[in-house]
Image (tube, rainbow, N blue to C red; front, side, top):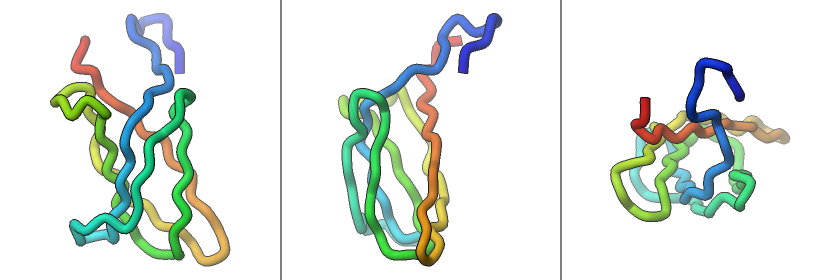
Length: 87
């Protein structure tokens, strides 16, 4: 997304993505997004929490966990936005 009033337009970000069953803390799957910020995780249908983290392990940039539902016979597309803290 590019806005005229935004000094920092969105751009792809390589990050660690961990998936847990909703309400649980044990990882069921994890991956690292590619240079274009894309990732894919194959899991059975169900309710999950996607937990993004930057690869450096530092506080910033950060992204909030996202609840996702994978339907039976389908897939779910999500967009993860990392906040750099720059305003």
